[in-house]
Length: 308
Image (cartoon, rainbow, N blue to C red; front, side, top):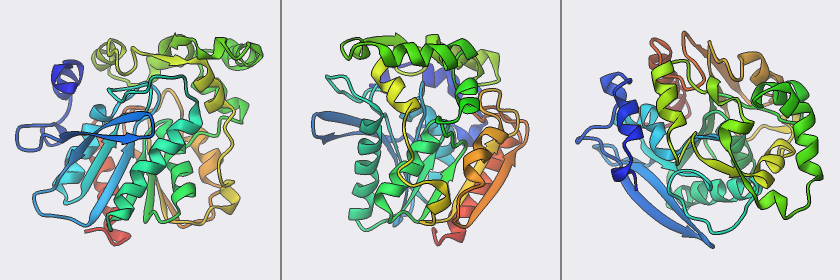
């Protein structure tokens, strides 16, 4: 598993010390079965036992281990933190084609595990994991708080234009893919062929590393998964969402999905909500002072909802 993967270790070198994994805070690498899916996940345990858990979801081109930059400091602040590899990425195993609903099912399963264990549970989604976290929260409903760096309603053309590699892909390519016979939708294509992966992080050195990661941005995805994610309808329309408080911690210099794109959905939410702009941070928010603001704002929000 990640003990044999050097990419995440090299990414660590570009993070502040307090956001790195060390021998003192190395996550437990666990597996759990969900139907025919063998889910791999990282679990960070605080030094003092806690009854508060945070499930963090990565986006397209990510994996659970790359979430260490926010998971490690949240665990240091006293929270249990769980970072699963979603199907198609990391070392989660699934031997069949799947669509976006599989992500929602896996996310729901992981969150319900924490709730059923009697823990106060929060959900955190980064990039495309933001809308996933939202949908999981709609499914579970017992979530104490929702944190997101982005929340993208792919039904909107402007959102698709930013998410896709270029406007030809977002306006013509998606129509071509939809028209393909179902057998073609089981074919995999490299993520970087269809998504704007060059904007995933603003640091050119980190970008080169991530694009080499065969279980992350350098991997491939099913055509059917991409179509189903682009066509997905939120489980609850934002105008009707009032399940829990929401914090949007949006990178200021997000070259992939700028703040205005997330606000198209976020501003319609009816729940208690806050927004914090992460100064100087890109889509993968590892820059100073944005990363420190991400950590501090997240902890402040969690404590306000009763986490401790």
